[in-house]
Image (tube, rainbow, N blue to C red; front, top):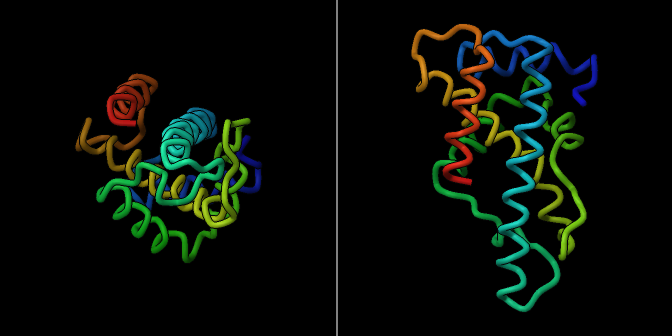
Length: 150
């Protein structure tokens, strides 16, 4: 769950990333999105590690595309003032998997979650360029877009 102390940081993040206003109810949907998408990436990481004869997921096992890598860099610029990565560390999925995470992979998860967050925020603007505050329907559409790709 997003800690109460973190709510203003997440609200500012969405304003900085895509000029969106979000509220507490949006943050629950956001938390679910981060957990689900990081988990999906880790599942693919397990498959890649196993295909390479390893039981440890390395960063290169994760399906990081060029676009996601660019969003991670963008997140790092936004995060310089917010220190959101410390809160995202708690939100990034670490479920029971058939492989363990290397220390390097573990350290990258909050930034991957941040890159996914930037992509999510920007996807709302693609869905509706005039959007100020995403509705439940906008969240559903954004999730469906990400489900197509991750």
